[in-house]
Image (tube, rainbow, N blue to C red; front, side):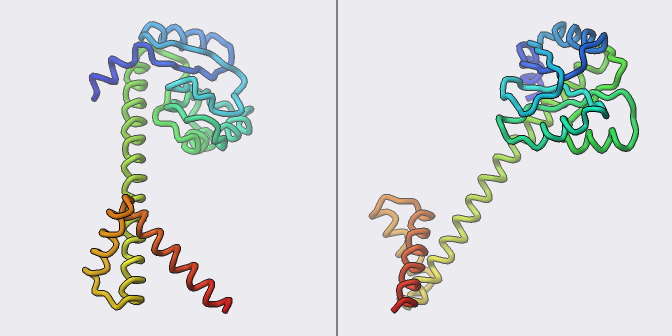
Length: 202
């Protein structure tokens, strides 16, 4: 995976959100030397554009509100975020942490360390994305198991079935209707809720 990340740095879309000064010029030159496709922007955008793989964001105190607005935005996918800082004080570090930056580049900008930071940040971001996908998949699976368990309890209570018989009933109905076990369990729960609702109205 590490080799692939290094290969992918060439052609990586990088957005540099930094005041237009000599530091930004140096940063852009170094990134282009690595092989990245670089776009620059200032002031801080209102939302994530989805047009970049990586964003290098200058943490400036006078645009703290703009940075926080960007971080709260849910528009577009969030890129790998690298903070660019000029000093280490508690409020700067707090903003870096709030931003969810996976790497930090210090000013004055130097070529040494930029490639390393870019590679590590990208690696951490990609691993986190895969972990988030696995977590969402496991959460869906757990929800499905909980629904099946609830549907079994409904059948056991309503039809006097054993747990194994209730499970087999759900499985047979799911196969007959060409549904997943989870969808069948959800249908049983929904039907039971409707019956209970109507019973209250009678």
